[in-house]
Image (tube, rainbow, N blue to C red; front, top):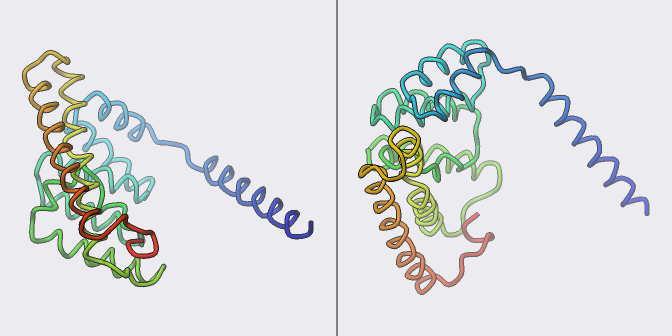
Length: 199
C-alpha cells in the first residue's frame, strides 16, 4: 500500500510539473504565424517567422523545425546548422528517424550527426547491443515517413488531383513497399528486433 501511495504521489507531482511548464510557454506572434504558414505549405515564410521567434523562445524544437524546413528545401548548410543547434542538449535518436531529413541522410555530414547522437544516447542508456541493426531500423523508419510533408504541402497548395500530388503519393507508396521487403529481410536475418538489442 505504501508503494502504491508513493507512486500515485509521484505521478501527480510529475503531471503538475508538466502542467506548470506547459503554462509557462506562451507562443510569440512569430511562432503562431510560423506554425500557420507552415501548415499552409508556405515554407519560406515559416522559416522567416521561426527565425524571428528563436531568439525570443530559444526552444530546441523551434531550431529543429527550422532545420527540417531547410532540409525540405535541400539547403543542407542551413539545415545542418539549425539541426546542430537543436541537438546540442538532445541525447535521443529521434532526429535519426525524422522523415524530413531523408535528403540530409544521404550527405557525408549526416554521419557526424548520427555518431554524435549515438554517443549521447549510449551515455544515457548504455551501449546498443546491435548497433548495425539499430541503424537499419532508424533508416527504415525515416524512409517510412519521407516525402509525407511534401505530399501534404502539395495537397494543400495544388489539390489531391494535381499530377505533382499524385506523383508524390506514388513515390511514398513505392518507398513503403520497398520498406516492407526490407523489413522482412531484417526479420529473416536477425529475428524480431528486441528493445534490449536495438534500444
